[in-house]
Length: 298
Length: 262
Image (cartoon, rainbow over all chains, first blue to last red; front, side):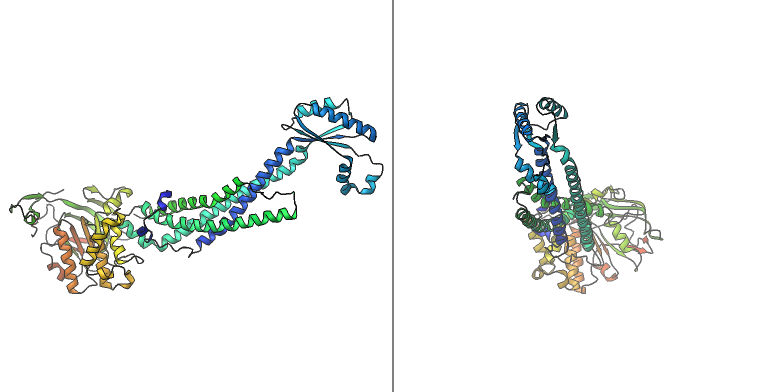
């Protein structure tokens, strides 16, 4: 079908190709701009969810709840030693008391923290694979004798609602992407029908001279493909500029929240393929529209 | 198919062979049998048409306005299917012919429309070349014949002109050239001389007659009764209120033997 794009120059004249003269390339540009933005958002979310999910699901925080600071320090040292020996643990990072205070200060206030409130000791633990409830049970059994008041907080627990939300956003992005594609197809169908009506006399003449439906469809396919490609390139270009600008804006506003390359290379490749895919889809839609319309003629 | 014995005019055109009145088979190209046509639920526009057109024959179709000439021509160039009856064309049933086979049959028919139906944004050259391009001929193959055709209709200087820049007569010549360029087996012309002066009308008929001598079956619908005398041996199909009369007897079954002029 894509070979139909390469029509001889004289055949192209049968249906005039007014480059960017009609509204269709511009409508497709707008649709592609929105589609690319939605796709970029979806890809970034998916990437972040995948990376974050992988990291966080392998981490747990061990809390040692002990009011006596001396006993707490001793328990922490013993727990750290046991954790380092535990199978599957790849890193153990005790959080310093000052870091914990810094963490709690915005919530509890400096005055309360400076009082007699006992602060738990925290230890960040990273496993090679996400720990199962059985692994956590074994770990609790190992650590129980050295620190009876211990709590294990798998990060996946408190991140679950967040990832649920991310998954919903991903689904939403996917649905919007599909809806935009459907709308683009609808635009193509309407444009082809309109062009077909404009050039009905020419197509009838072609038919009466022995032209086939496929020959007529090729003329429209090429015209629609050019419009879609031009509109697609404009839409993608505008979307790319927007994404890069937004990415830089996010990085400047919140360093560390997003890296400078929020969209990976593969993400950019996928985005760049969208105009081509839409062009192919538009050609296909044009072909089906023309052939189904011509079938009503003898 | 009805077989009739006739002298073959091609024999006298061959310079190396002595004239021998040799016998060829006269073959039907179109056979209508009890054909009727109605548009929608209205009365029949064409009623009980039964006739045969033979290869290499020349037919004038006459009749008053509204007699059904254009409707009959539409059946002949496969733009419509009849409401009833059977049509055989080139030995095949054209009524039940699958739609995907129609283009192949249509390429064997040249049509000159009453309103020309030239493609408005194509030049005279491109309009004439259109049937050849549709048939898949390359640019190299079609350039010569199209240029020759433009010369023969006197429009070689205006080959780049679009229809809007041509006079009615010039448009008609382009339409005729487009119909005959592919050497169709049947040439159907609806009032082909309506917009040209008498001299050009005579020249166009000479062109049709020349094609007819090369074996093309020609059907010309016309109001102009003077034209009927211009082509020797031409048969007349007269339509009256959708029914066909047969003043020359050529459409009978079996037909009157037809002697072709050399």
